[in-house]
Length: 222
Image (tube, rainbow, N blue to C red; front, side):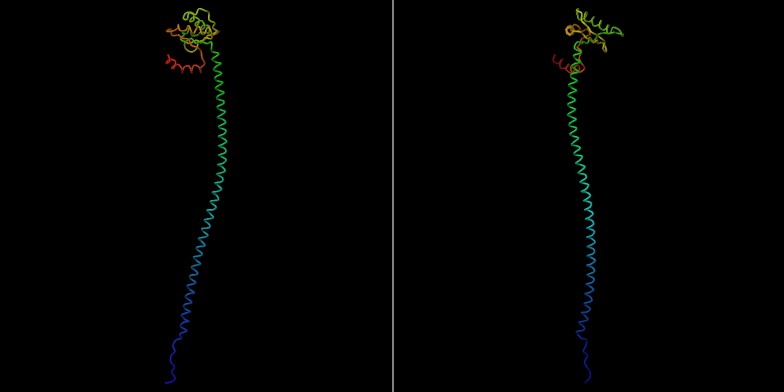
C-alpha cells in the first residue's frame, strides 16, 4: 500500500499568522478612530477655550471702560465737592456780612428813631377836637387849641404855639416852643375827663408800636 501520503492539513503557523494579521488591522482601525475622536475633542476644547478667552477679553475691556468712567466720575465729584466747599465758604462770608449789615441798619434805625423822637419832643396831639369848618387853616387850628387851653384846661398864661394843623379825623397836632408848656398842658389834661377829648405826646411810629404792646400790661398793673 505504498505510495499514498497522508493529508498533513493546514499549517498551524499560517493560522496564527492569519489571525495576527486580522487582529492587527482591527487594532489599527480602532486606533485611527480613537485618534480622530481625540482630535475632535481637542478641537472642541480649543474652540471653547478661544470663546472663553474672547469673553474674558470682552469683560476686561468692559472693566477698563468702567474704571475709566469711574475715574472720570471721581474727578468730576472732586471738582464738585471743591465748588461746594468754596460756595459754603462764600455763603458763610455773606451771612456774616449780612449780620453785620443788619446790625448797622438796626443801629441806624435806632439813631433815626431817636432823632425823630427828639424832633417830636415838644409836640402834643389833641384828640377829639371837632372841626371848625371844611377849609380849616393852620391859624384856625391854633385858635381852636388855644380855646381848649383857656376854657377847658384853665391855662390862662399865653402858650407859645409854633404851629398847629389838623390830622386825620378829630385830632390836631401842636408843636410848642417850650417843653415847660408841654408838661403843664399834660398835667392839666386830667380836666378833659368825660369831655371826649384827650391829649397825648407825639412819638415816632416805632415807639407808638412798642407802647401799644405794653398797654395791656399797664392796665393789668393798675
